[in-house]
Length: 323
Image (cartoon, rainbow, N blue to C red; front, top):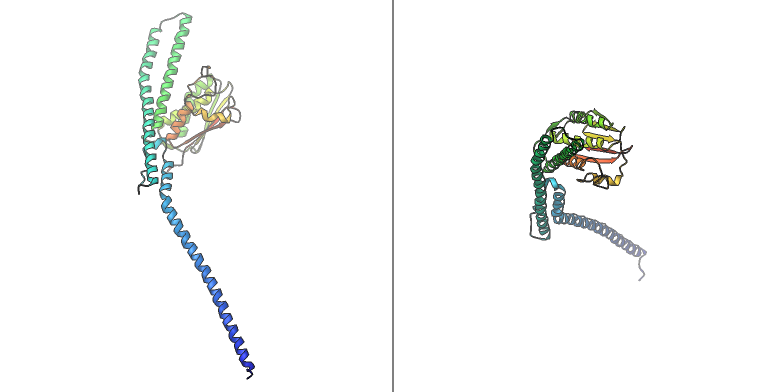
């Protein structure tokens, strides 16, 4: 019996409806599968980040503590807590190494301070004995010997004083106060004016909006004295030394022999000078800039040097902002 054309149309319509439902279902499934994958990926990422942070938190703590530890605060330790794993054993090993370093630095500081103190008394006695014993008029050749002996004694006392300052700067600051950089600089330049005039070196100082800093007044005076004296001493006749204070920054520029940039770091090491021969008649004991750098570090200040535009050095001292 022949089918009614309407039946075929109904079947096709039904097939199209089923196909449309299937396509819609597939699209919905694809959409929700994509959403599910994204949600799972996001959850996996968050969970992985949390687990990684939890696992690496001790490493970050150790890194931050290691950055804080320096020669000035070797008493600090990592003191890592938690399970006795590889990281904990690494932290304990690092703390043990810091114990050894602290003992070594403290031994060095005590030795320098004690040896310097012990040397000051015999040097002062020696100077007094020379002055008393050789006070009477002497022949010319003995007068020269007396002058050489007194000069050698004076240089030895300066060396001991510098070592004491170096040890004191390494120990850090016990008490601080407000220090006027401009007044300190004026005092230092006035004290060194005679030495500059003797060497025929022009010495000038200027201040612009100088800001007081917290620190040890005596140590800061020695710091400025060492830097300015170094600029006067390592100069040439007719040269210049210009000291400028702006805010919390002090700049000392001097003329003189050119200084290679790669040689500047050595100037901040004790007993290091540019002259290759230590027996050469170069004034100074090689402790001026190292002492200044030690005092600057004790004040959390940065002391840097660059070759000067006309020879010599440009030494910059920057104090940190007020807390």
